[in-house]
Image (cartoon, rainbow, N blue to C red; front, side, top):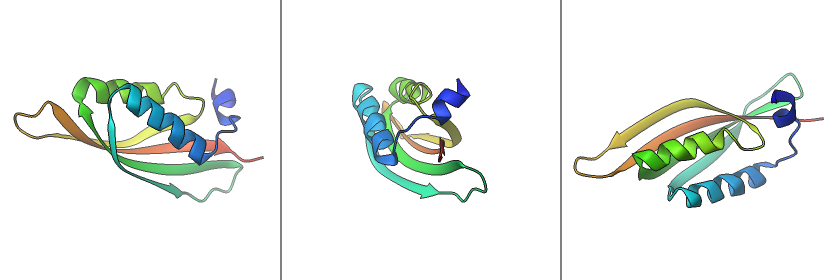
Length: 103
């Protein structure tokens, strides 16, 4: 399973589009999103994707779970959820690490 996900030919723009569609499905608002490539001495390239998202707690959980099922190696590196009093929506800062193989 890991080799298949690493062998995925998804570009960063493809992954952003897929993540956007998943966000729409779960009624998640993506407030901001940045990508930063990390240096690597191997052909496996890590990219840090930092996002600020907002949605109901249940839908944020569903969204994050769905990201694990996309055709790429995606790991949650950092997660911080905040809820304003009397609000059903949570703002979530999430830092993902996406690994791709560069042949």
